[in-house]
Image 1 (spheres, chains in turn yellow, red):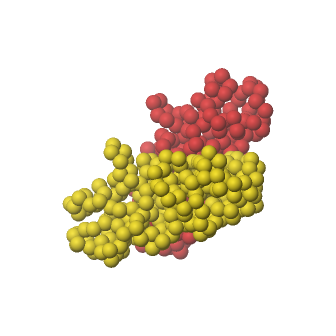
Image 2 (tube, each protein chain N blue to C red; image 1 turned 90 degrees about the vertical axis):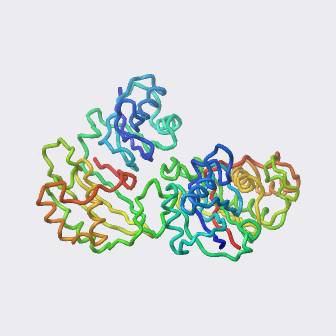
Image 3 (cartoon, rainbow over the protein chains, first blue to last red; image 1 turned 135 degrees about the vertical axis):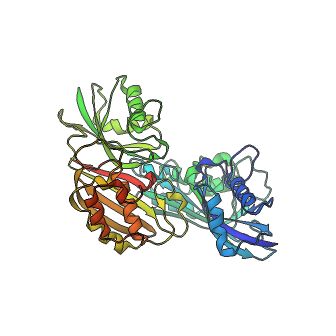
Length: 244
Length: 244
């Protein structure tokens, strides 16, 4: 047996999220079905974390154990041949038998894309949320600065969460512009359920002038989901990179 | 009554082409249904030309006549509200009553996108054809040069065509590279059925070393579809711009 570590990109539009769920088409389900066809083994993969329905990945990481003798350099090609076009294995490497894709995560990076052009870019309609009126990026950046660091993110977490400890560290939260696209880049040691989407939804309300940038301090302190902004739509979010 | 000229972009992946067909979901069908809901009129739009199933557009043009009093500057917004996310009206302007979206075309530009990276870019899987092994761009450019000008393009036209006159003028045929993407840009006074896709399919065979660049001259002269290369997949093709 050996343990393999894989990096996978996916267009999450047509999946009910990453994690296997009964009677749903999921990314994990597709990958495990491909592994079954290739190896004949009943393999369960372990992802770095789940992503919600409609959320994409550029660098999701998972591991699995196999007795298959397929040479390392052939794995990505063989897997991609068995996977739909919307899931692409980017790399496969051998990992230590103790490597764990979820427990060993050091940093996760998510990026959220807002199409802020006057009319939507049709070739980005699956990967960006269109907001028609120009956003005030300077205000969004001032607001974002309040979220960097170690905080209790209860206000920025779906009320449906059962996790007890809601303290997380955001290392970096940038608001960048490329043409008519605005990218919110968020790096942290871990994220609560819907946390990036609620952060983005709140920053957007600041960018629309509906909230003052310094309100973020009060929202954090309130520890109350009701105080923050709307959850931004799933389609703009991409799990960008996982660092171990 | 007034005549309106519209520019529309669409993700053609999920449509049976532009033109209305019985029992099929088409771009024209979606636009006409939206116009019916907005105006109450039975409007038939006239496109600059059809696009095949799976082919996209950035700048398809159509015209229609309406008695509706909707102000010109509201039209795009009102239409986009009624259209699926995969069809976006980019502009609406008033045209002369004699303007005709098909008959008045001067130049059409198509672009074909090849993803030539070692693994496919999952966010381009609907809009680019993935070719894994690096293509020889210089050979493709040499081959392309033979196609520029006025030629009988019978060899680069689907055998299913009923058009008599197969002489067309290609003004420009460029092979460009942007990162791992190769773009074939083709401008001409008109294109035969599948012409751009057969040109691209043949250039790809040159880029793969399966054909010599100067073979193009013989293929043109043969006036025989069998002599040219395969028809490149629809998904890489985009109707880029129509000039009047």
